Length: 300
Image 1 (tube, rainbow, N blue to C red):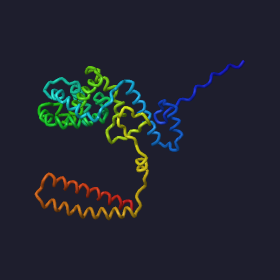
Image 2: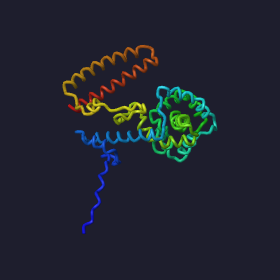
Image 3: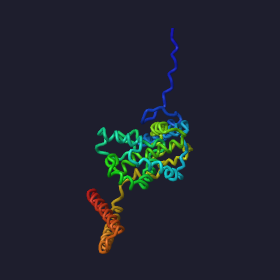
């Protein structure tokens, strides 16, 4: 007697890169496209991760960030941040940084938002975009105070002004923003920041980062940057023809002669900050053109 076999379950729809189960419809749409090279697979992978992050953002009821008012919000919290510069003022992130420095994990201390040993220092759903804006604002406002503090404060001296601002003042600032957003206390805000770190990195990257945007899913006004067809074509462009290289060499030579004249004119005058900057800019351009000429000779 034959036993009826149970029908096999349908195959799972897995991302070709990370092997995570994805929506069958978006996978089918991707597979219907003519190009499915590694780059397209990577873009698809990032795209479905962004889609998932957007869904999590809505489920967790994170706020819509008004970036046009962000600087004003940050500045409104400066009085609270200034109190952290008083000796012996309590700071969760200062204690965290002190522990990292004391453990020897940061002998070669480098600036990082989420590098090894600094995973707990994060700006949560504000992402690297928010972290960068906060760091710029904090450095502009408190750099002098931090330099003075470094003369007597071991942690500030070891981390450096920018390092201390990034690893202590910025997350302290972010924690206060999250408290306002979510109506929670300090510890709950820090927990939200830890839980939303990955979401923030995907949905609020720095301005120059390219993020694949799922069609129709930018309803939160996050300002995600999609890679255009022109950018893809630029990546695939071949080397310039020889005639264009010759014209470019001629133009470079003319620029070098003009630069030499500008440098001479500037150096004949009394040095000033503007003059020094002009000289440095010209010399940097000459160095780039010299390297480009050498590269052209090697190709020839």
